Length: 181
Image (cartoon, rainbow, N blue to C red):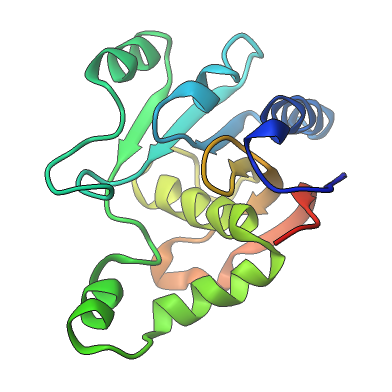
């Protein structure tokens, strides 16, 4: 499915397609990028194991966690695993760019994935981050959901590899994404 425009208005349809495809393929795990928890909540009640990957603390401003503590607790009480950590394709490479200028390998990879759109890049990133954190099983396909800004506008079936084996990651299917990049 291709959305005409990127953005939050695609969230409900993206969730619906992601859940449908996961069930068709017998996939048990969904990894969803959700900074406030609102998109992650939309996956509750569908019989899937949910991993919610947030922005790292300090992403928007120093020391600030974008997910309210009450939301994090609510999600965890409902069985959602919430991962808040340094982003796979940012971290030290971004610090080098901010300090010295230039472009570094992780950012080149991120920008290459953005050819498919920000949401698809996020899908790959959060799937690998969840695997590295031990929150999804190794060697199993997952449905990953990401977006452009707020909400979700992309979903993909991914067989993630650990970050140190990044190039063994396989995007098996793109379920949906915006045509607008």
